[in-house]
Length: 113
Length: 112
Image 1 (tube, each protein chain N blue to C red):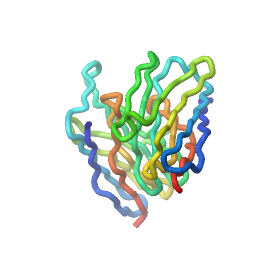
Image 2: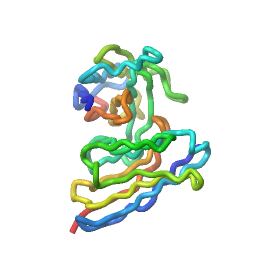
Image 3: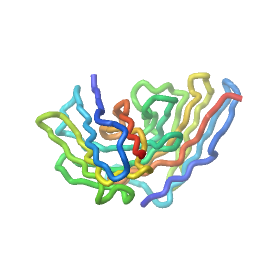
C-alpha cells in the first residue's frame, strides 16, 4: 500500500498569515495518462464529512476559495492557505487515488494562534 | 443536487453482522465508482472498500473477508455488508462518489 505521511500533525497560525501543510507519499502517484499526480486535499470540520479542496495536486474544486492552493511533484506535496481565516480552522487530509485502494495521510489540525 | 444518504448504522455486539445502505440521487449512479470510507472516533480517515461501475471490487486488508461491497443500479443504492464485526470497526461510515461527494455518514458502534 502507498503510505501518505503529513507534517506537521498540528499548527497554529495567526489570522491573515500563511499556513502550510506537507504530505509525502511512499512512492510515485503519477497518473501516466495525463501526467498529473493523483493527490487530493480535504478539509474536515467537527461533525461534518470531509470536503474536497484540491485534486490532481493543484486543481481547486468548484467553489473553493482561491486562498487554498496545492503544489508539489514526485512524492512531496503541499497545501497552502495564503491568508488564514477563522473559518479555515479544521483538520486537513491528503489522499492518494493512484490506485483503487485510496490511502489518506494522518491529518493536520490547523488552529488560530 | 447530488445527495448521498447513508443508513443502517447501529449498536451491535462483537461478532455480529450489519448492512449499511447509501442511496444516491442527483446523478446517474451507474456511471460512477463508489467507495466506503470510515472514521473511528477522534481518528483519521480510512478507505475500506470500493466498487467500480463494472462491479469490480477492492478491499482494505483490515476488512477483507469480513465486509462485502455491492451496488444495485436499479435502486441507485450502494451497500456494505459487514460480518464478524469487531470493536475496532466502531466508526462513522461514509459513502463516497469519486472524490467529490460524501454522505453525512452513519455511526456503527461495536460493543458488548
